Image 1 (cartoon, helix red, strand yellow):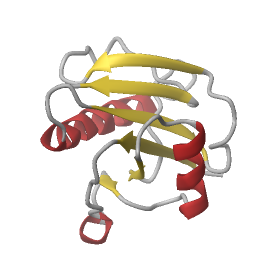
Image 2 (cartoon, one colour):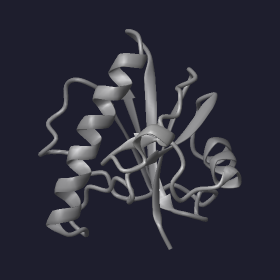
Image 3 (tube, rainbow, N blue to C red):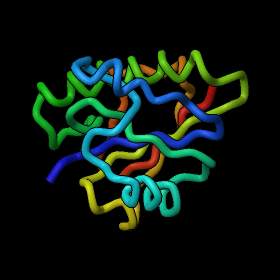
Image 4 (tube, rainbow, N blue to C red):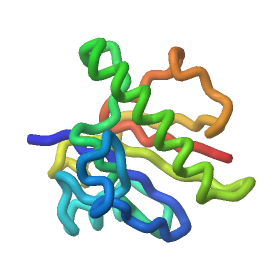
Length: 136
């Protein structure tokens, strides 16, 4: 199984997976199929659009993950916020959800809201099946 991360937002975002397949982080397909994207949009997000955030492993920041995975996830999250900052206007938001591929319809285990450019990356915890709303 693979851990996938998804974002939901109310604007269309271009996929850059063809250009950046070898990059550390990009918006585009990696593990999930069209059905997985449909399910995460229907069961988890409140937004009009859903995208897989491809990084060759999902974003999970938890005491139950290894220090290496936590450090990599923090780096990915910072990059994701930088990318989304260029697309979103004041008052907009995006949502982040990570789960094992195939578990998109299962009940979420938690939710938090953060200000996109005003959180301490060392103080947050984002376990799998947690919906995170990032507000700009």
